[in-house]
Image (cartoon, rainbow, N blue to C red; front, side):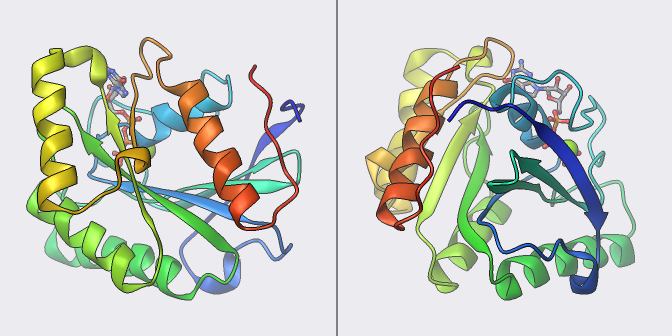
Length: 204
Ligand code: GTP
Ligand code: MG
């Protein structure tokens, strides 16, 4: 299918506020400022659907986006933002872990890692949490345009060797250059197929 309609559904914190229609959800998690909202916009060919900012801490709630009422993208608050209070940080972490732990429609989790920095301690904790919850780990290396190929290669080696990721589950992206979009959709098509979900996204 081609995307006809992508729309913002709701910002939520509590489980009771999550959308109720039983369609699969794809979650994007990662450090504050890693590029989650920008990635969602790039994937959906939209400029400003998800709000982005050069200042970290823009997405503070769980934002749900519906794609043709067939599946949803879920933009989670960023973790590791130093400039918020401890109690605020704990609140965001609780939103994230609550969603990941209890969401019955959650099909797949993409952890975004900044290509420049590589997996931080918090990213490693998140990857471990995804594994512990029984999900496959998919990593998106963001801001590919900011690094040289040999640096990107090193970051990938860390993900493969230290964190045990499968090569197929690492996608390099640049939202700036619209790079990695087709690879992402191919990958998601594989996930849909493996899960017996009858959705196939065409290139667009
Ligand atoms: P929070 O909502 O704070 O958790 O951040 P986020 O992960 O949603 O990041 P966001 O998409 O708002 O992007 C943060 C900053 O990085 C913005 O200034 C973006 O323009 C920039 N950015 C995002 N993706 C890319 C990319 O691929 N390349 C470059 N060069 N900059 C990017
Ligand atoms: Mg955001």
